Length: 296
Ligand SMILES: [Fe+2]
Image (cartoon, rainbow, N blue to C red; front, side, top):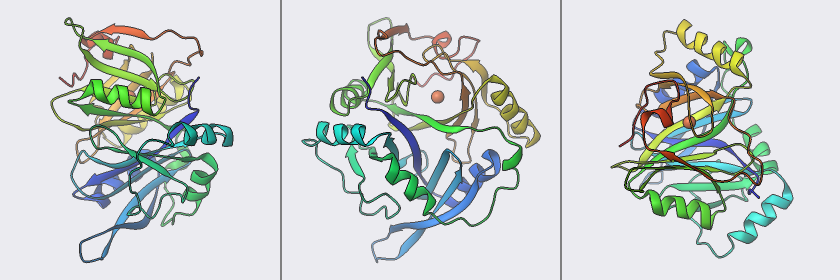
């Protein structure tokens, strides 16, 4: 049984947040918006920028490149939301009062690496997204296939503790683990719904954001997105390939801060009784079709 949640939003840190959001607006056919950002030490409120399209949203405001302010999952039913609140009633909550754009009912936690992971009911997130300002329409959005926020990846030097936190404390289900020859965990794919992973953890020397993925409905859609990147002269830096864990086809580009940004499709739909898989730590696991970006 999963917690029945879906990833809905990333709020990235960036030394140049407007430039970062402009990339997502341009490259992914999203609308640009602006929301109140974090207050500085003098109480002045900086701007946070958002890129929005149906099913996908990225925010950015001032901070360190390749780090997250937070990532937000929605619980898809009121029963799932109630169950999640009960499960986490004893878990210390993180203070997210600085993020005025979050729904009032949001619950937030700090994982072992200090990332802020936020949860809210789907109804609250839906209402919250509609409440954000819209500055201008995306000029190229009409010609692009759908693609919805689906998962993110995080690099961590504490992968055992991170995997245990998301699995044992928050209730994510481990779909697949990747082990090296010594039996050490090197990557872990966890799901919050029937879709194979909503969070991917990669063992690495540093703790940082790795990538987010927008899921296209099918291979034709992914091909259309790849042609779109070609038209924009936006270099595809990895792929097209097929991941082992999740079996999803994918390609990745890089945003101006160096974060990877993925379009994926055909991700595995897991049955409740699917056994956890163990994969070997090698390039072929991360790309059945060839080369991989190894994080360590
Ligand atoms: Fe991915």
